[in-house]
Image (cartoon, rainbow, N blue to C red; front, side, top):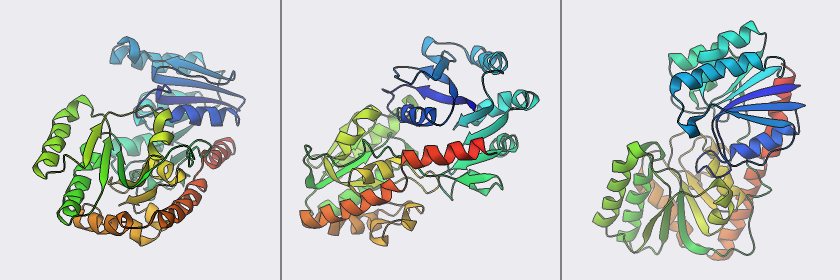
Length: 345
């Protein structure tokens, strides 16, 4: 079977979407041929049966030009694919869904986010199946939705013996944006600091231009709470550096709302970090002592305090259990399930 994929970015160096390169590699083993049409193309090293086309955002093409290219590629390549898999961007389906239907191509969409609208509903109506990882995603409500593994590449997201970690270290690894809720962790750290708890915390993340003022407010919050010695802000790093970063920290905190099932939760778990999150999806896989109430900084601080006081050996035991959780959500399992759902539909 031949597959046409629409996605945002094909670039191993992309800070936010570099992971999708590994997805394409994994899926290439399941399909005869894959053509990937992306909004922006960067560095990639993909198998011979994968062909990448760009809509040209990296060259400054206009929205109209990109829209026309979506339609042109969809028609010109009609004999080169049997089905269409749209990753995250419902806009591609809203634009070209009618054409794919006219060409008798089955449409599949991956969309995993707590937010959605009537446009999401319309895009889903074109689809044979909709995929997401969270039962709290907006798209989980559809009759044709199939829940999927998160897709962690456990071949690289694992404990690295040559990377040491401080047992009192905390990592926040996400774009500095309101939806990621980094300010909640800062509030929890302020509570711990007042109690005299020993810790260090690093925030890895680069804000989008529209979030620059928000990121600046986080810096001021750290200063106001006198956390300058314990907290550092570092720029976002390429996806391929993720394993070495996760391995340098004992505790990973994710404060995002349920419904996204952020893949970093399982990437950190794969590296044997102790994962502390508000995710209701993760709550079904790990004990309650690692889950805090959404939006509640006091509860987060209460969850972190015993972990920071814990002996290293006990932390390591929990890390091994976290790794087993990640293995059940592996990229190998995801590519297998996705290919089966697409091929057998």
